Length: 513
Ligand code: BES
Ligand code: MN
Ligand code: ZN
Image (cartoon, rainbow, N blue to C red):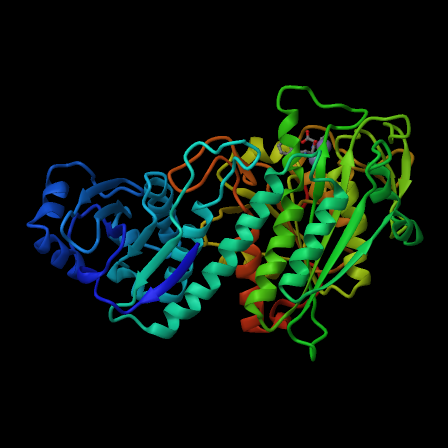
């Protein structure tokens, strides 16, 4: 998909579809009015007829036979006063997906006047949404259903600030591509997407984005005494991998942000095997890892002034003669012993050693993302990812940054109460704390491996993939948390990473006993 800015006038622009946003007030702005006039009032007619009300992602198409543009697509943006830049990602996605499946190869977008206030982000969202919409989720079909043929998108510069638009498009292309890389990795089934293959993808994308790459194989993991990570792949013939992608954006600084992503290429549950019902979806259990790989790619392309390392522990959780068993006790890299209560609580076990390793590599802040618990899906559904942290300042900064990016995050508490739930009778920790507070006890487990480094845990079990398609996104993996990672890195680069430094703080609310 080509995305570019044009200074040409919309009225004389040759394209498959001119895309004009409409709000629920159904008012036609400057350029739209001009086009409406050229079409003899056809746009006004569509709006007055009630064919669309301007609600988000509604679409009406008017053919413009004798104009240089072949069609005009009116697409809803909702209420004018609620406009925010990221809505343009969905608008562009709706346009590209819907029209692109109807044989429209080129589109040109008119920005609403409201975009002026956040112009860079508006252009970024538009490019990102257009690119994300083109992803073909049926690459394993001998023939795809109705391919999205749209391959060129233009954005009218009009009287907007050209440099902000240029910066936005550049950002949107990097994020859109990254999001699609993450989604394609996730779509790749477990028989092809093994831990070794995931590491190879990380290496490829690192090279493409100019990042350093290192991979720990099982022998190196054993040297590092990563007993927890190593245990999860014991039942599988596929060896575990730990990929490390390094971006040095601020060599003079000691600050290092570590992004850590769970890369379970398939989670059967192991000996504590899952029911068959939705087990096939557990090929998506590497979405956190794919998100880290993809975000690192975007960061390499965008070059923010911040040191960032990406760590992707990856393994396959299968039952087998050598598989870990309930009751087994393992020792993680930091020496803590873990009693395995349920082999299906494997994500926290591979993350444990990756978090220790992030600290060894000098991480001064850590964010992890994982499809970690069904409990988080019960708590927040598919509407938001769960956020847990040991540091109030860091998590406050994060929540502010991600408030308006098109991915939703909702904080859950990290009370001391949960620590008791995961205390083992025989070892330091148990790997599960029972059903109550399942998302939080998982986070409480991870907390043991970050020491006092400010840390945020993102549980993306409900948001990493969706079971239904929308007008702007194919069914399946969503690319969460790539946008959040990039936005956080940009913010930390802008403000200096040390802004939220300090000791880990406990959750404000005192534990009840
Ligand atoms: N990968 C799953 C969590 C999951 C569930 C992700 C549903 C996406 C959708 C994770 O490894 C797991 O199995 N968690 C267990 C933990 C339990 C055994 C404490 C769970 O949530 O049931
Ligand atoms: Mn599991
Ligand atoms: Zn899992």
